[in-house]
Image 1 (cartoon, one colour):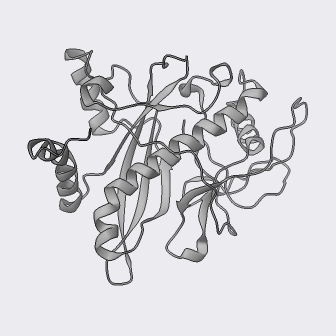
Image 2 (cartoon, helix red, strand yellow):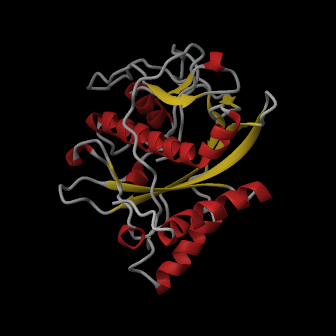
Image 3 (cartoon, helix red, strand yellow):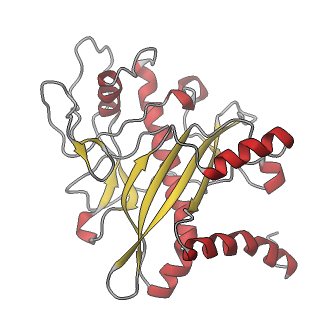
Amino acid sequence: MGWFWADSESATSATNAAASGAKCPVDHKAKASTPAVCPVKPKESKPTSELPAVCPMKKDGDNSSGVSDTLNPLNNMPSFISSSKLPGQKLDLPTDRTFSTIPRGEDEDEGVWEYPSPQQMFNAMMKKGKGDGIPEDAVESMVDVHNFLNEGAWQEILEWEKPYESLYNKAPRLAQFTGRPHDLSPRARMYLQLSKIFPKTFNTDPPFDRHDWYVLRSNGQGGWNQVRYVIDYYGGPDDEHGMPTFFLDVRPALDNVTNAKDRMAHWLKPHWDKAMGKVDE
């Protein structure tokens, strides 16, 4: 997966994007979870492992190469990618970019994060040599998958942040992020080891991508605390309609005692609710 949204200096409102609750990477029957289904047609989708790990940023425009070598510090990705059609390109790919639902930066005036257009994604793939073998008519589907998964990840983060949002009456925001597709998280490594013993319970395949998101949480004093979240992206089996499914393992990183307590409380809550008879019908 690896792609993430583009920065926008003027984005101030968000469209309603399709979002699905993030799910754990273990067998969904064991955890009574429902996989997030990709919102594109199967024939248009590509294996998630082929999705490139790059991210266009900043304002639209053009330059000689189409991709800037300057990296944006918020995501360590190129600060500029052109929306111009490439020489030899057969299809006209959309150049419109979609607003996410995710607030960006510390100030409300910074608006929301913005997703790359299909043309920007295609330009970046070709520039980085990752476009070979990917049909032009599959690029829009790749953007749909990218947007869908990241919206789902944010919805899961909002569930984690609910206690703090209620306590301080202030919603969280996303400060920055980084893709780490080649770095297995400690939990992903643990699941892989457990899958050798319990292959019917744990996913036997590693995640196809990993992101670290740096979320701003109100400190109750007019400022923010930064909380790192780790997100592992797993591919699941096709559903009964042949649609690809995905599972997202989203949790705060074990960087401090507060995050450790939150993870313990998050794990214990369903067991406590079940013991108290609070089971969803």
